[in-house]
Amino acid sequence: MQKVLIFGGTGFIGLSLADHLLSKGLRPVLVARKKPADSVEHDFIAWDAISTGEWINELNGAKAIVNLTGKTVDCIKTPDNCDLILRSRVDSTKTIGQAMKLIDNPPKIWVQMSTAHIYGDPPAQLCTESSSTGYGLAPFVGKSWEKAFYESLPDDTRGVVLRTSFVIGRNGGALASLKQIVKLGLGGTVGDGTQGMSWIHEYDMNEIIYQSIVNDSYEGMYISSAPNPVSNKVFMRLMRKKMNVPIGLPAPEFIIRIGAKLLFRTDPELVLYGRYVKSERIGQAGFRFKYPTLDEALDDLIDA
Image (cartoon, rainbow, N blue to C red; front, side, top):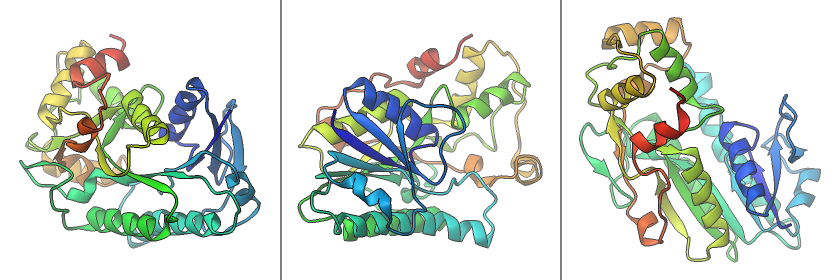
């Protein structure tokens, strides 16, 4: 079985991807600071994300690497957290690049996570790969992250950058929290409800990464998001419908700004702002989504 190293592989996306790659006949190896608390069937290697060490030996002869490393943005944006959000992405990417130069047979494929938030929060514009990037912390982090990747990518390694949207799945991520909010009758419109919620089902996210590994035509930057983004109002309404919850109290902006920090210890702008993104290049590469609409995705993920 050909080996694929998943850096930052012990989070929700990494574990889901590892299962997917294993089902495709590849051998995923999780690379992270700490081994998952729950028992998993995948190999694990520890690293500190900032320095080379014994883990670089696992790179020798591997088919590909997937880099998902980065501190979660689901936090209050203190100066320290903002610094960690940036450094955890940029420094880890540079460290992988340094390690690739120290081994005899480095992987020939590098799939790099990025963020669709690089486009900022345009209120109504549909962004594609050809759209300009935005202004603010997240676009700055995204551009710095991608710059570090391209500077670290060896000349003979095929590189794929995935500007990823909101990933929804069964066993983690924000969907679990949203379901609890809906159950409590609080799953109404957030703010004015017009902010974009670009999303992707975990299966399609995993399959895009798999195709990036096995299909030599995949190269460069792609938006990794379902082709049908919706507004916050539509997203929450459909969740209530799928969960058979008739009532969803709206959450005005001032309530979100207070409650997000005091109760949820997170950034209110994560839900107050958003973006509509859609890939042009992924369809041109021949990719077909299993869950192209939110209705189909939630039917799979929510048990009524």
